[in-house]
Length: 351
Image (cartoon, rainbow, N blue to C red; front, side, top):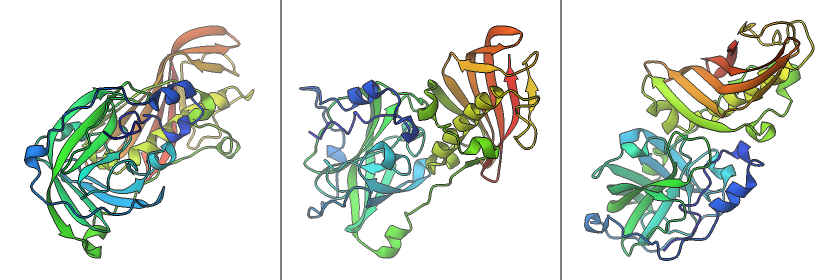
């Protein structure tokens, strides 16, 4: 049986750091006694394991991961803290390294690298490269289990991928999606072959006015509730498999908070600092306005035919909006255009 952090990892982004500490404490709760599950990959294991190898230090590169079916190519870091999972999948230190006898566990946030692991089917391959070799695994099964369910530690070389479930949720979830796989081939370490698995994570930026850019606008600063992230248009594998969706969502929420902050400033045109000047609809009378989201923020990403993000909408279905003309309860949303990795505010809509 492997330690509690495997299936009980928090499903929150690093900028949630100060948000709902009680939920994070619950996520780190011990294993439920007697809930060990049988592993599906025993019959699939066909490759011998390698001798045990030392674990890398926390934050160091543990492996390189490739999942051809869902376009994942990522560096795996040692550890599963929110700070580490912000930029890469993490290898659970309580589990063996890939290629060794036992269950090696790699976790990632559902919004990023493992957003599409529910597309994996029995027989699909997963490749992990370490300093000891390049290891190919075959998927045995996938399943959804409650947080805190014990993962089995097999006697043969196996690999489990774990993410919070539902896979489109931005909030703390009560379930985990698990992919079980067994080692089917291993080759000695070759620097070139391992290096080919390495990939960098694209980052996005927000085009904020200078007076707002330095202000605390991340989710942990605002305390907003969050709902789900959806992708439409072109294939979403390109952005989610690279981990770029993490940065995209973080900056989108930051832009949402920036508009709320700007509208509270007594000025004839409080959003004029955004370039180009956005279209504003639904705000009647003169400002300033106080906008307080009453419903979770949902994020909708529109993709091009090639899978690149071209527009993002961040919406609270119900917001309390107060101005000189009184207080109303109505939706509040912003629309962002994405050009060359930068998010630009193009519309603010209240109503």
